[in-house]
Image (cartoon, rainbow, N blue to C red):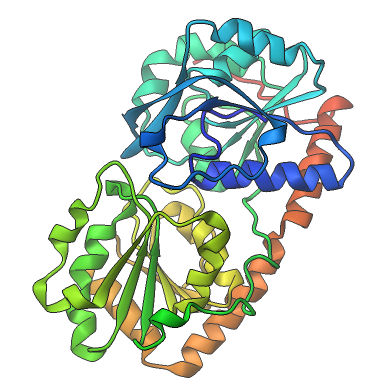
Length: 381
């Protein structure tokens, strides 16, 4: 497994790689992870290393602005030599995660003698990098023996620049780790209803629109509580969007160890995911649904593939505090709706277990090795 981001850097790709690796090991495979080193200032106070004995680290991480978010790149003066040494162990499969961008994905494809594939985890309407560097990247795409996207949105984003045959294998969750049976956090149970936001503090996550919706929620539910789980390079600047009238109704939990996240889902009545765009799937939606919680999520491409509007949550207009508030109020005003949506979400989430998704990825590997996979077959334009 190859990625410029992995634990202790916390995020969806790191979680995906970890659980997929664990599932493949259960199926009898040897799995290693190639990533980079992270400085303490990038870790937001949480140093989570669940699988370090199977991890190779090269270079150092640097952060750049990308896709309305932040991207991590691996930098070092001897990266090529270090990558080559890792690959010399003779892997059968090299599985890249993220996008085909500098530095580890490019270096790995340059030196790999194995079957190569990539899982695309990102959605974007336009990519300046792919627009300008397509001629340079095209030979590397042609070295791929297979391309997976976690959703239609992730596939469509890259297909605009590199047409070819892609396979969709979605994200997954652990239905035991994320379960309706997880006990809630007692210190927050004196407020109701309890809302939850989980995500990094960056523009694309849309936290400011949720905060702007809170005065409308308080008009109906004066004793509500919003738990904000996450942090980011923008720090706590989002507190500027909190009106004085609702300041006592918001609690910033900071960076939370991933193993403790299920307890926050168990504590809330619903999850709010107000991202404005650029979401390929929304793993937090599945996690909340697996815990039996309804969701209020933006009506954007990646989220529409997870949430069935009116069945397991509501899809609302992006960037609209009014729409977010209406969705929250509608769910919290009816115990029956909240219960039925939570049950529907749990049923859906069970279809995305790592046991099922891991077997699909393993089958894809076997097809590549046997020469039956979906090669990119990229066309010149």
